[in-house]
Length: 201
Image 1 (cartoon, rainbow, N blue to C red):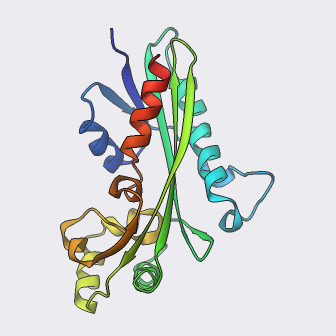
Image 2 (image 1 turned 90 degrees about the vertical axis):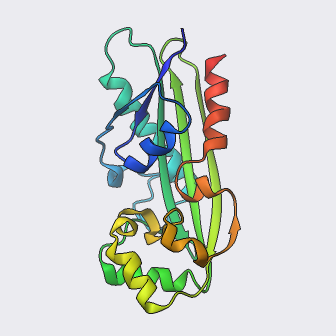
């Protein structure tokens, strides 16, 4: 019998994207303090290595979900974490509309970089696999009224790095991209599929 997936995430976007891959999943919130996760004792998150930090947070989420499992629960636990960087500095979610506007204007000059870590754990066999996907996106210049309308839709304010690539309004302003669209959305489907195949064996 195929194992169902437990998605350890509070992100409705990730749940929606996973539903495009499988209907056999449930969502549980890992409920961890991401700000408390450090890599090699580096307290300044903005200067941490994004690959190592996203992996550390995704692992912490996986550990938290595994503690929630019922005894003998059979599942594939999937957790992810995403960070955006600009000029080598990590950016979380914008704290205001003004900050988000400023960031988006910067991404029209130089690309924003995305890093998403994925951790998958098989509760039956104990098999574990993890990986990181990266990408970058440059935006065309947007008229001020278009940027204002984008901010009014609110979703961009909930995204790490204060950018979005999936909504219809932004499509004609997408310029040069490296990596997949899904990686830029914080849900690297190809990597997830590879890791799921590894732990199912």
